[in-house]
Image 1 (cartoon, one colour):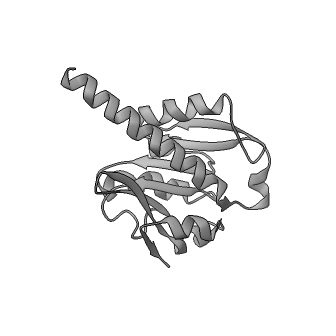
Image 2: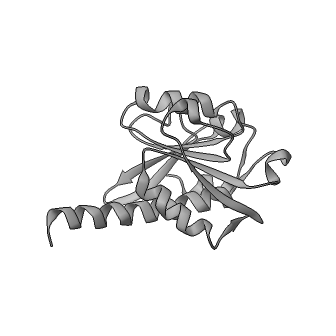
Amino acid sequence: MSYGQTSMNTMNTRAKFKSMYILNFTKYTEWPAAYKQGDFVIGVVNDDDLAKNLEAISKTKKINSQNLIVKRFASADQVTKCHLIYIAGKSAGEVEPYAEKSRQFNCLIVTEGNGMINGIAAINFVVVGAQLKYEMNKALFKSQDLIVSNTLENLATKVIN
């Protein structure tokens, strides 16, 4: 198998794991009443594999009886009301414009990067050993009027209050 194929399989596997985690985050998070009607929107920034996985899932699954819609955003200006937004980026400077725009809504911000849990993301993916895990910032859930389940908190590798 060539390097390209191996790399692609690894990325797809990782995107599938992130998709599963994201769906579980939605099960253990409660949004304000106004967000319990209409479509359930997940925004994705800079991660085509994840967006494709979520789009495939959206054809057969609902979130709390709401249709699942996946929106891809190429710039912070494009960000609209979402229940959850996953922002891929290696630095706070790359992620922050999207997070800032998302804060206008009751949006659960999910990232993957060093230090993102400190003031940017309510949930941040981390790799522990060879496993994908997550850490969470409860204050950022509260700031978006989101209620997080103890189950989600208990499974996090690190929790900031």
